[in-house]
Length: 531
Image (tube, rainbow, N blue to C red; front, top):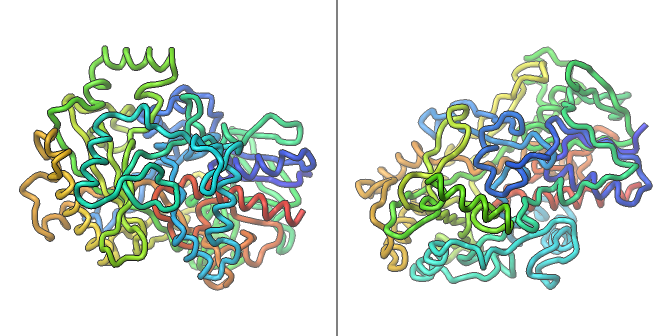
């Protein structure tokens, strides 16, 4: 009999397991559907170019055709490995902004305002900038600044942003996220710092079982008492005092539905008895979209280094000998946040800058993303608070089957209008003197795309997910419209919590990995308070 069983060793689940086991007082079982993270492509920061299409460590979900994308399917990589998506992501550390969490608290989620959230961030951080008002030091997760290693083109991006009215920022996780600067990343001494490497330690009271996929929850009356899981060809069960579901924004609602918790119509359609009807399970699915401008440059970019075999060899040796160089960084080196309208109370558009370009290919057609054979860079926009929301639902009682995912991108007309306005801003940014001086040609969308209608059509044809799905087990005080309460306990079920990005009531501004880890940190605190 375990004290706590955690299903999913991803960004939040690893944090929960680490915190619940660190005192030594509690017996903790952590189940992960994927393998160990002892993998060179995971440990090397830039290795996500390989894991992006690797089914051994990646669920490689695909959505249903998206009407707002002119019927295109969206590819959603999600981590299936210790560390979850923090083991295969681009490592950008962005915590969201105060307004995001003020919104959560205003929706009835007491204790989720910026003061409480910032305290959790400071507790989990071991930040290069050291302890202070905005950052923590000595926590489990190392956060690295890249000032000394960023590519020179990244500096030109920051200068160009200033030329079009965006102030430079030395800390995009400081007093405000507003401004343009270099992104902070989750690495430690040149290696990727996933939630697993940060939080999971060998402890006699913590058992970590990999390649163990949960198939359904076990109940006694209205109480969750265990989990059934598959390990190879064998079916097993584990029972515990409390069950924590940390399988992510797809896996958590999927397992709840497989266990009879969810919309009655969905469950009945696949022959699953309704244990607890809850229309919110799998709803409120939100994600960030991205739209790129691609440029060929006269100045060298990372393509110049990483495309030729001798360049790969040189940076490979640099990494092996020093743990520095391009292989120790993210491709998203610079970026920031700005207000599309000065009247807005908070920044609403995120910027990305990558000193490298590559042709994006469909899943299973290209095992390793390779740079283009010419120097170039991307600039990108991503609206922080899209209004469109989707849903997911199991389409079979078979736990092996991926659910049906409907992201409903651009279903709200305001989202498309916002992206069109931001696309015009990217064109203006590319014309700023610092970037214009090194641009030979705008390859995409190309100079022929100029008007609102043309940009709108190109966005429908080329915009893509930034892989930030959240919200499918929404947190809120009302059992009629949410899945978990503000302490992350599932409404109507005893002994069961959901602790991962699926509980976000609304999507946060920017990259969602840091907020996901923060949710794990906060969730573990709630459990220990009740212990």
